[in-house]
Length: 395
Image (cartoon, one colour):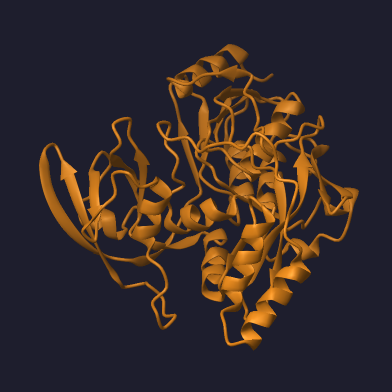
């Protein structure tokens, strides 16, 4: 959990039910992935899971002090802060310069700078486009799902993690701090044996975090890519609009997290109040509750994989523990720690780990993930559809 609004959560227990603005995120991945529209992990390249959470974390006063001392000596405060966080062993601790943090906040608002494509690593090591942003630079250039990205700006990417590939597509800030919107990136592409290059101009694009469609058998599939602002309400609206008794397949595969308040709102679509998660901030116990009035009779299957992280794991664990869903897929990532932002003297922001959260049944997620009720590696969506069909219709 992290983000600029965390400090607003000074209320405990049911006081956080409404208006909670926690963010729960995998900082290094979501800052790249959500900001590029990538949300990068395909089934062939699951992220590695740490088996135990890191106990040691950086102290915010120590980080701020190191940054101030560095600046007083004419050095980079951001680099000094990064060194302290790195030494601390805080797995999820991160330091952003001011412009990076601003970009990150825009990503949580549902916009990003990039060329408008999603990609994954294939079994033979290639980077394959999985989908493109409607009307974005990639689609306008004729790039589509199945195309292979061979290189970016002339640099080979075969052995690079997909997160690095997405970072190259997004670009950084220019040396003068100006936005990369309008800057050019050249992609080497391949399709059916034909190779060519495309020069694309990066643009500011708006994401649609929720996709709703009907799958075989008439069930409603709600695909949630990230918990950006407004996502929870879009999930609730989709459930309310569905015909009575229609089952819901809630697809959280590849969801890298986002705003916890949005995940709680999404949980409220299927729960009539009650506990969603507990968490601690430096030892102080708190809780998150669903709003009353959700649809508690409709059959629900939650589909997850190794790229399901953070706020998406919180939602998965809540529906599983409350007996509200059957979970299908592979074990989730295992990111259940709480980060708090601190502004440093040079305007940069340090996100430091201050606690962990647990599911309603008291299960820790950090370093463990959520284990599905039905573990499936191949054909997971079809298996999930069959399970949903077997649950029958709500009365």
